[in-house]
Amino acid sequence: MKLHSKISAVVVTGTLAGATAVAGAGPAQAAVPPPPNGSICAIQVDNDRFVTAVGGGGRITSVMRTDATVIGPNEKFTLEPVGDGVHVDLRTRSANYVTAVNSGGLTHDQVADVLHTDATRLDTWETLELIGQEDGKVAIRLFDRHFLTAVNGGGRSSGAFDSNRSVVKSWEKFRFICGLSF
Image 1 (cartoon, rainbow, N blue to C red):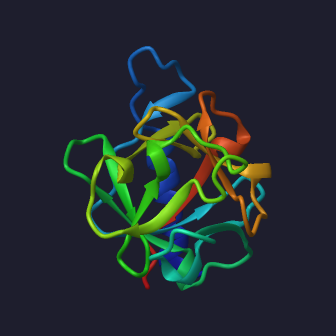
Image 2 (cartoon, rainbow, N blue to C red; image 1 turned 180 degrees about the vertical axis):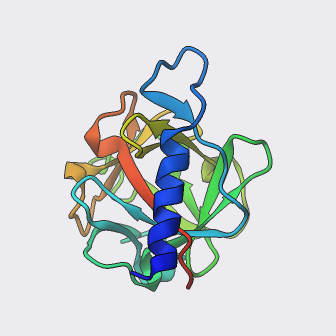
């Protein structure tokens, strides 16, 4: 990893850890300010593996994995604020948006891929809220207010995500490593 990337990762982690607390959320949850437009980030799951958009995006089956051990082009996402000061979107290398199917509330047992990467325009199912955690990681809240889960903490090549959790535990926490380039 280049020095610039390491510094950026530290800055992003520090920003998330030091964010302002959300009213009523307590010290464990904090509002995360949107990243600068066009931030390119890798997303690390609980077991230190990385999220992959299979084929660089544009898919509705065999969409996302959590078993990558290194950051390659398909493990990089463009993170952009949607303009409301709260939500962001994730775009894949193919410039498609990551979508929470049904806006969330599903398990991989109900629907094999609770996330799709084929959206070409931004709508509510493509908006995410990043909630800073006390440990410097981030929970991803979907439009329906559920949290995204990396099943088994990561390491999966299929059925990698659930979108139905209402409580943040270790599998619902992600580390964003930003300041990367494609």
